[in-house]
Amino acid sequence: MQDQLTPDQVRQYFPDFSEPELQDAIAEMGKIHRFREGQVIMDYGVYVRMLPLILSGTIKISRQYEDGTELFLYYLTRGDSCTMTFSCCMMDKQSEIRAVAEEDTTILALPQRVLDEWMMKYKSWKNFVLLAYDQRMNELVTTIDQVTFNQLDSRLLDYLTKKASLTDGTTISTTHQQIADDLHVSREAISRLLKTMEKREMIKLGRNRIEIQHLGQTS
Image (cartoon, rainbow, N blue to C red; front, side, top):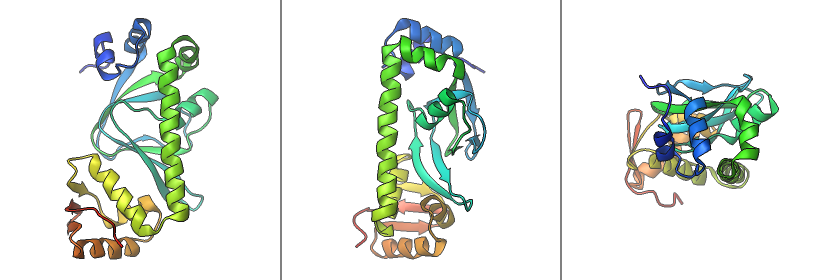
């Protein structure tokens, strides 16, 4: 089973990496890792020694509160990387996030030792990292705004919309408890809202499944 990319494959997955020397370096240094749905790719408190580039699948990034509960932050999909992981690599500090494979996922792991050099040496790599920081920061600000200012119905609507966009756009495989954990609220509150949405024919509830019919406003 292939455990590295060829330079041609690097260009296919990451066309913005324009320097041939960088493409060759990624092909040489990157190692392919495969994770099954539900596997923890990175956990709280571990030292981060590699930067993942997502080749396929979806990764869910969460942050843990002091009481042990978690808050969902954002998803990573093909072509993405985790900037919180990058900062841990560069500063040699422990992970403050948990990364879990939302579905079967393949990543290309780049070693910690090359990241600083590439930032100075390759413009396209620097641009990739800065753009990733900007995207993740916008997502984090959105999450903070939702937790602070938005009603739960708006947060749930946004959550379902994002979740559906990762698949076929019509079916979400999850439980009421998982949604509650991701949004850091009670399962009962989520169940009540989902039933309200079902009555309004926005969704159809099944066993560990939600079928999207029409996601409009809940109120």
